[in-house]
Image 1 (cartoon, rainbow, N blue to C red):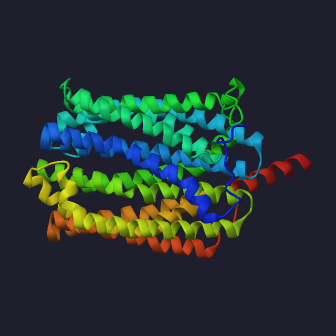
Image 2: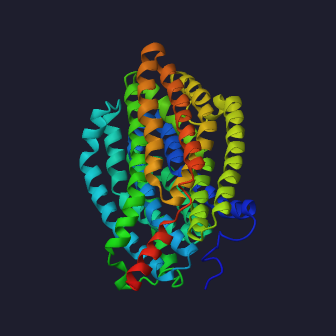
Image 3: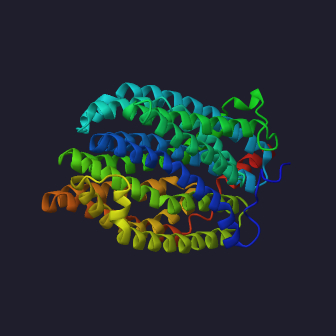
Length: 457
């Protein structure tokens, strides 16, 4: 068995094990976010506000698809992680095979659907740079199959404790993306189409690297033809856990589309400003959001092994780290907001509102650091419906109404304030969930118990 193939997260010091496991996930997430940052940076420099606006509108839609992929991947990853923690190699292998086959099918369907629906969706958003936005989104849609494929393979690796290899794959593809961005947009003069083509090529590259690695690691998955037959019981559990996560992330994405729709009413300059500040905020969020993924995987293994106290300790260790990261991010962003925005664009009509947006919305990092870590407990336990409810409170009951109302009162500044305050509403949901103790269960343990009862019967 390869030494780097699996890591048991049920043993050792909680803090050091969590940091050792999560750091590669954080690094990979930061690198992956550089896809969008590189596109925005290079397009803004070469094409100005029109290019920035095109990416702002189209990229948010692409992010929803990516979030759906990550959400459903939580179902396969958490189930695989619990089987690994429970030392159930047979069910682990059947889960991986069903998971990968399911994801391949979903990726193909979404690639076709979004290629066809790109222009109608962007027209509904009243995208100021409609033609450029459509071209960017249609090309990105061709890569959704690779997005789903890579996230499935990465979830499998993380489920068995291997967080380093996804980092290596993303590092290689990020370098490829940046090089191709410069080449396609600069010398080739392909505009926003070049930025999208570079992203798709990089996504295909990361998927190919991950697939090549797993086919050579028989101790994780044998890749035998018999394992790619979807087993109904595994698929149902994956969907039961994954669909609420996917819906939760879709709800979050759709609420941000509502914000973009409100911003688009103010024209291409504010649309570009919102896109630039969003890229900076998303980049700064990577430590917290990826720490959430690492924490969920570690909690899943410990719940699979019925180590409930260790799972709870993992939760609060991660939360302290996330809060520290949030404070540092807020301080840096408040002080250096003009310089950060200036990296992307010098147009004062764009830079001014982008700085204001960043300084207001970055405050929400504190709230994200708390409720997203609570989400990791819910996900690790397989209670993804609770994650969906928390997101519904934050995105639908708070962000959308506040953005609409504050927009009437204070215009764009009101929209920014609404987005900063909305995440606070999910904090009490997480506190109540942890206190009630429903997380002290394990899907894998229930499945194994049911199988034993069936055998004994």
